Length: 328
Image (tube, rainbow, N blue to C red):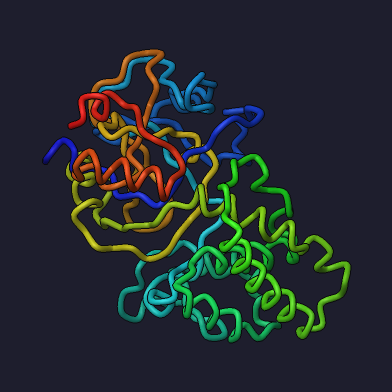
């Protein structure tokens, strides 16, 4: 497996924010690390969140972690299938639907009764509205993140999440042109809720400022979900390679703990997805106690100039990792 071939990600760097409690299971929904044989280890993941002078918030190893070890898993706070995947993946966990193994509910499908039950609250809200104009707007402009804001709005109204649940994440810097387009989407979303006869109290949180702020946070922290299939018992390095080589993008998701990992063009860690949106973080080489764990936000097989251009224009920072310092 080429060393630099790992890393096709759709997420952005997060910077200084108050540090949360790493062991809060409600916030991170992460499980402890495992070795390559899949044996779970007791206690929290072998990591801590700290601050760096150059990149803000970061994730550090609290003990030595071997190459290919699973560092931790993480459940998403928010998921959303792509428009092209609506008929082929679970409406909640994004697992690919096979044959007749579907649980259908008012036009959408789930992989299990559990996912259907867990979606009931926000989907009951969603089915009250006519989203055709909003979806057409997203499709016309090739926007994916406004769809995630729509789902989050429905979850807030249903009580599944709070309106400030993503405030801990750093937002992107938006241009005036992008803000103008965002405001168009806000108007369409607001009108859809009001036409569905939601009360002013129901949508009191849905201000233009909230919509813009949430969209900016989702834009900088959302991961594109590329499913690689397989099972937990397979070699993790092979699965990491498969997640780069495959074309299994099914949607996007936002997480808490994985959003704190900084970027490196020669990463020592990798994020991947097996069968659904539950994320797995693994090491690509031995990591020593106290060492920062980093993933690659882009296709690391690109040359230096291409990487710098993409990271600067799309991600808002210039990479100064060891590989970039050598202009590899």
